[in-house]
Amino acid sequence: MIRCSLGTAKVLGLKKVKVDALPTTAYLMVGERCRFNCAFCAQARESGARADLLSRVSWPDFSTDVLLQSLVASKADNRLQRVCFQVVQDRAALEEVKSLVKEVKAANPLPICVSAGPRTLDEVREFLELGVDHVSIALDAATPQVYALSKDGSWQERMDLLCKSAEMFPGRMATHLIVGLGENEEEMVRCLQTLYDRGVTVALFAFTPVKGTKMEKVSQPEMSHYRRIQVAHDLIKQGLARCESFGFANGNGRLTSFGIPVAELQQQRGGIPFQTSGCTGCNRPYYNEIPGEDLYNYPLPLTEEETKKAWAQVLEGLDLTKDERKG
Image (tube, rainbow, N blue to C red; front, top):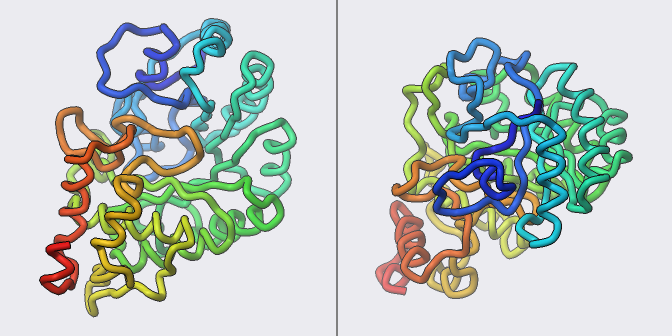
């Protein structure tokens, strides 16, 4: 058996559900109940959350044969742009996904990424030699201190492996960062700059409380806080600005300026900074959101009204002149 996100099941014709936005990536999950104990994760070792959850998304299970047949059928209508394996951290799942990568590649020519926990450069190389497009090593936390409070293991060891892998396999490494685990805006932005300087692709998430996890009562980040990080991420990713040109408030590290007038950024970048980030073709509908509420990550291009609202949220707390605010 293998799990896929509920939206993926809808796209593949395996579930009849009503959704506001369909995924453009087939999200598959291998394994259940992790050997690690991340405080925010439904799959953590001591989590009391439902076993079919990852973030807010439910993941029904299907036989491997049924899922592979559905992926073959999906080739004809171009509904999907990528296949992404989310691998729960246990030895059995890590070995199982290697076999599944081969089967999926034989069934469908879509690029594949694997979000797993390789421990060595050799394990990273093994995935890439199987034909995986990107290997993601989830850092999640922006600082060692936040990592120690929310995850198992060593932040520095994981960062070192990520950076060494990116140097050895340029353009092939990715990671996740979660905004709202306890870091401030400056810490997150400087971590983003470090990762992009080393050629690592970053998928940005908003912390999402899940019932049954250690952090179930922690609030999500304020939308204005997340929006500022999204703009900084977009500028750094596109090479339009560096964190050294940004302004930060003394004491709390809040972003106060981007070194470029916000009116100019809004005109140039539109709604792009607020769309889901990560590998090409990844839109992750409702990983961080409740349908009907404000979206942290937009799975589709923003409307003009949504773009205006997002930039208005960016402006909250920025140190701007009246002219810049009017712009």
